[in-house]
Length: 239
Image (cartoon, rainbow, N blue to C red; front, side):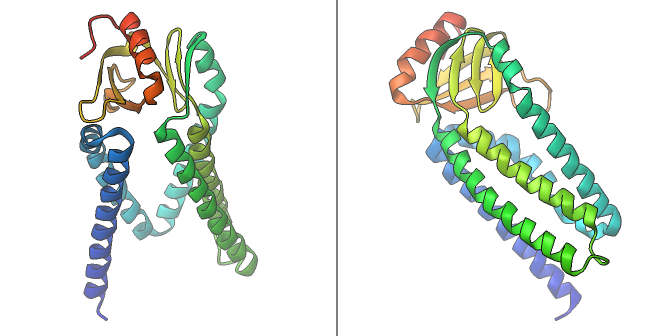
């Protein structure tokens, strides 16, 4: 098989895999927050998805520099996630006293299952990496393998932690998946027409590149209470 044919097959496989990921994302998102919110989310994330996909394909082609870049990224990710999770008690304290505990949302429960899957992925990668380090110690880049192990276990821990986090409405805003959104940042809110239990909040993003909205599934039994609280804190802005 010629090199050009191999490259063509890799390109086709990459496109098909990307299409499968996007299709699955749309299907799952539609079940969790409805088609309107999912389409809006995909319009925002699609360019970033393409960029990350391109970087992931390019890095392996640049040899040792690619391995080093990957290791640095992995370490930065590990440090960032650990700092983000450890700082949560401070952010939660800033949110004020609890007004409503709506429990784990559909999104959180789904992310928890993704976390369990990631545990399996991390376990396999750990086994493969340790096997290579023990079997081929001289040919294997130990720093790269160790950072891979740390990265994938951090990914798993991140998803599990977010999946176990509860949706809470507090004195100074809402807490959702380890994120605190203050009332002062919220511009408006509305319930999605096609999915009345999905609350979409428009807000001021911390950075211009971040989305200015978030869609949250609210259990139906808490919908009226959430509406009452939001009307109090964001008067005449609901739609």
